[in-house]
Amino acid sequence: MIPRVHKRGPRTIGLLYYLYGPGTHEEHIDPHLVAAWDSPDPDPGRDPDATYGDLQRLLDQPVDMLAKEDRPAEHVWHLSVRAAPEDPILSDEQWGEIARRMVAATGIAPDGDSAGCRWAAVRHADDHIHIIATIVREDGRQARLHYDGKRSQAEARKIEADYGLRRLNTGDGTAAKRPTSAELHKAEREGRERAAREELRETVRRAVAGATSEEEFFDRLSAAGLLIRKRVAPSGDPLGYKVALPDNRNGEKEPVFYAGYTLSPDLSLPRIRKRWSGDSEAASRGDTAPSDQASGTPTSSPATARRSAAAVAWQALLIIDNGDDAQVAAHIAAAGEVLDALAKTSAAHTRTELRDAAFVFERATRSHIQAEHGHDRALRQAARDLVHSGPALGRGGDGATTAMAIDMLFFLVTAAAHWHAKKEHAQQAAAAREAAEHLRTAYQAAADVPLGVLYQRGRRLSQPLRQKHAARLRAALPELAGQILAEPGWHALAATLADTESAGHDPATLLTEAARRRELGTADSISDVLAWRLRRLANLPADATTMPNHGTAAAKGSGHAVSPAPSRGGQPHKTR
Image (tube, rainbow, N blue to C red; front, side, top):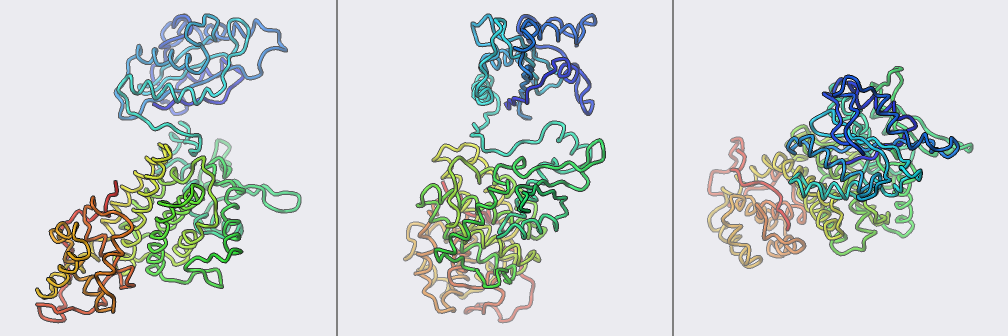
């Protein structure tokens, strides 16, 4: 259940006309009162003799009793309360009781207070009500409405429990503003996938990902096709900015602009500048990101950029597990930039899920813990490399390294969920968990073909060679070896172990290193996870097509197409 306190207004009659009217898009059906401060009467929705003016005069009576100079300029209070889409349709009686609980909790009409404010609850749809009230009490004093939004949220959590409704997570005031009903209806009418506000937020976040200067940031916004207005100081320095979609117009056919801070608290220009200042401070300390170049512009291929992102994500896990809160907050925010960059440059078969992962993880990147930027420079550089390396081409070599990157980002996002849960950041933890599920699906799409190549190569290994690698596995990971050997993905891992040995590495040492940092006991396919980690640690080609055959039992040089590996669940492992 989602309550929302709206901006106060000066005209009771104006809000009544809206609540009882057809709505902006004819969406209001059968508007009528379900509860009021006295009795649901007069009701212009059900009584043909009642008028909006009758209800307005009754609501405004305590206000009109005051001297003109004592009346508040904006005396109309407005709260909407909406049920979740999966909730059952509530009766008028149930909505009436919910309205009474809300006005009591927020301070409009406290329980047992006969001198509370006058209010009325209007229902014009199955899933929500609107409560209109005037903030002058019957005794002439103004209602104490401090923290009315937080109080309404707290009461909503109790109502959800009492009515068996969907339990929403308690917020902390750091979430981005939701699209209004008008914005959602406009998006639906114009055939947009998301409201303009959400499209702009996603585009601006992608422009921020890995950017190192205002010039680069604004150039990316322009390249994305957004209209930009800058607020400039007398010195000529930008103070802020607004953006608009070229085809999102108001009634006067003018573009609808949104300021950065209204899209999301961390997208204001001052907050974005903090990321860049963190980069400068890190550089002054001598901290360098793995892919820094003198030119400042990465020139790596998509496959190299993805492999680098996987390596940086592996290192970031240590910070989230063991770092102080300010550093962890910065790394989680920077992980959001990597997801944005990966989604921006992803191939078609993973694009939707990666975009959805980045979109929902955005909520996990903000909390009341202030991020200490600078230490997150390696992640931000990885995001920059992804953007500048260009889009992945598909399911070939960069497709394999995409699977490798997604695998490690899954762990990073899951670690972020655990950290937020420990800090009791309920909404952020839920967002990170949802992002992890999108990454799980994206991984399956990205890993199918490259793991199929490894699977077929492992099946062609000679029996003595497979037995040798199985013995190494038992020695290095005795508690997990039985499970791994029973997985279909064992053949892909066996091929990878053979590749590591051919490249001059000790397979047993790398196995121990690959399993050391995160527990694997609940993995859906431990062999998949270890195969990617070994290939990254040994710097092996991700797609394995350039590796030699190792003691194959079949004829050499088979030119037949490689079939995908049998279904193995194919997901990154799930940490507890």
